[in-house]
Amino acid sequence: MPIGLVLMRWDERIGAETLAKYPEELLVTDKTLMQVYSTHEYNQEAGMISLMAGASTIASYFSGPDHSLYVILVLTVDEDPDTFEDGLADVCRLVVQNMEGEAYRQILPSLFQRVSIYPKLDEEQRLMMLYFDETKRVVIQRLREEGSVARSEVAVWLKDLYRSGFVDLESVVSSFVKAGIVKQISVKQLAVETLFLCGDIMIYRQPVVNIIKNPIPRGLPAELEEDYMTECKTLFASYEPNDEDNFAMVDTLLDPQTYEAMRLMRQAVVTRDDLEKLQKKGVEDLEMVLKRLWDANFLAVMQDPAGNEYYALKSDICIKKVFPEYILNAIRQDYNDKVKNEMVLMEHLAILEDTYKIR
Image (cartoon, rainbow, N blue to C red; front, side, top):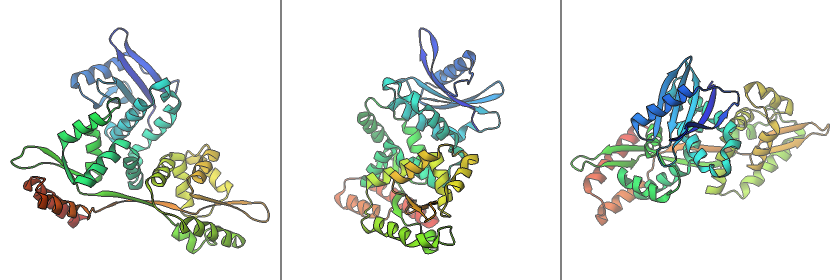
């Protein structure tokens, strides 16, 4: 488990300036901050570096010269800093977005909690992280429309799109490549690094089938079964997938405490006593968790004649990686219209064929 998080800026007059840290009692020496600065200065570009500092390991992410922000994660000596790289890039982006009025101070504890769990994220959580990042959403949307784009063109486009924001294209591309959604290849004879879409993210709301089929053995009193089924049917009778609802679901479940409670409720109908036992797994603010699940339309709350409350999921999220069959039509259209180099289109088809075979 990481030890703490520090936000730093470098001031040419006073040197290292600590903007905020969590927890407050965290101690990072000026010598260590100077080491962080000088190591990034040697590389002179946005991205992550790691170094040893006494009995700790330091993973630091630099935003680049436009914002000159250093996000420093203090780790135990046994932790691998590379496993936190995507998480630090995510934190850096969110801090830059919340610079006005020092709003980042209020969200620093949740950012620390969020980055701390990155190495243990499962496939579902990693896809939610990809979807939640606005920059990644706009990049994948463009690739959905065009199929393939030169990396240099994407870099210019993003810089124009986020004139005052923070964009680390290397981190964006790397996360897509790791997820198997994008391939980055230099097309022969063209010598241009090109991004090719080879996967996509599908997301929608779905029933909790294992509980709906047998709610009573899963912990629901028989007298509440009809009420529960009515709530589920009412929700899905008018449900239509949409971006706003998808974003709300992901936003809710990216909170580690809420996701831990969701794990339990995917398996059973629970009481408050059951949920309070999750405190040993880090669920400390149960009221917040229940409110988030309720607001996102995940939760059904029922009461038996004795006044006992039962909590059950009336819906769940489905987020998965899919093969982008639709992109074949775009490739065919580009070929017929002669709007793209034929070698680029052929390379894309080869990538899709390989992806389809191993999926």
